[in-house]
Image (cartoon, rainbow over all chains, first blue to last red; front, side, top):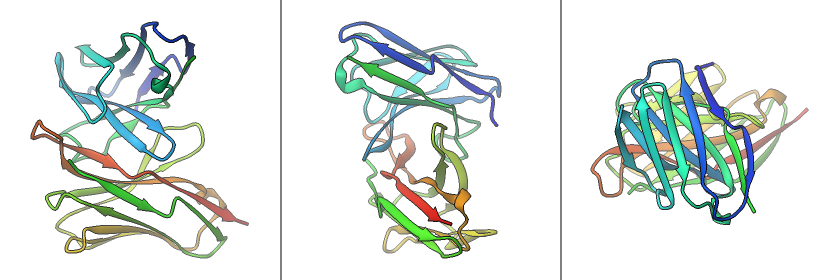
Length: 114
Length: 116
């Protein structure tokens, strides 16, 4: 398995609170991604990174921000969590060009916003 | 941006039968089509992929076909086994919404159950 860890694995929080999810990789891959998975929607791209301090928006970026200060870490922040952000969040990594080679996924973080 | 539709949403087969999952995509410039398998409580894992310059690819019991003209691609699993039970996702690498970059767009998933 690719060396990807996500923390926390489960979190319950209240509406309006800030939440930060962490993705850590040991593969030294350049590209990192955050997806959310919801029933009937598959996986939808939130943000991605193509290098340290280089990030861009995906399909469903509203309400989320990201940061990448080191190759191995990619943080996803919900500045003020809402119930619509209840979901399973997956981090993924890839070695080369955006989406054109295998993406390896982490184990996921289940977030519940009450 | 790219739009990927996947059918069926659930599929139940008897052990040893074949299973077929179909996807259509909208962006004619899409050039890479992976299939992922997700087991319960885990992240998706790539099982096979195909690029736009190839019409078919096989790997043991798994095959993928691509029809660029019709913009659809399919996953075929032969001689299904109980361990094939999982959720399967197709994806297409198409254009991103307003950045000009390309990224994977996923289908909504197919839950495959293989009955022993």
